[in-house]
Amino acid sequence: MRDAYHDELEALTDRLVEMTRLVRSAISRGTTALLDADLQLAESVISADEEVDRNHRELERDIYELMATQQPVAVDLRVVITALRMASDLERMGDLAEHIAKIARMRHPDSAIPASVRDTFVEMGAIAERIVTKAGVCISERDTEAAKELEADDDAMDRLHRRLFRVLLSKDWDHGIEPAIDITLAGRYYERYADHAVRVARDVVYLVTGTRENGN
Image 1 (cartoon, rainbow, N blue to C red):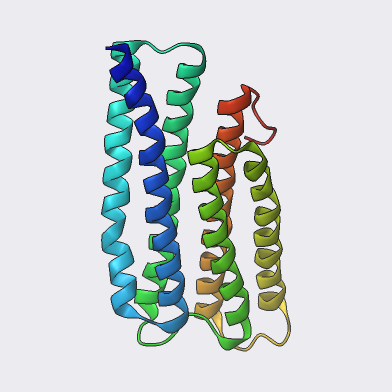
Image 2: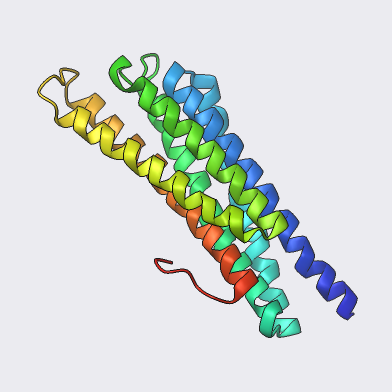
């Protein structure tokens, strides 16, 4: 029975990695939908979020069952606690990708993103994909060094987020209020997406070292 229990603990890692793949696909397709006003792609992101939610619910249910029946301690307890936290962060990342797709859907057939900030959103989308890919590697390999690299990616996302505000507050902004709102919201969604990925990475560090990073 203990072998089955440890198999279940190890399976949590695979399920979390699968969630990173799902939310990576969501942010990739959501970015394309946002930039290209692709309604079909936006709808696919919105409908696919149910799969992320279902994975989260099932993982949460199984973790609680493990805690109730096996009463894990020490490292095993860290595994289930961090898995619970990471699943929650990944579910939220899926929600944020869905929100981006909803902006694209709302403004269709027009693009929600003016040409003046298109390059910034291309960069934000690329960073989001990179950071969630690294998060998946951190989880699967328990790689604390890779986990620390995510902080630099998050800093780059924060810089792009600040750049958007400089554009919006510039006297040259002439696109009106609605695009400004869309850009403000979308920028915030990307920034939060990266923040949740960093939380996942910090949980990997905690899992491996038993030490909680500052800011988490």
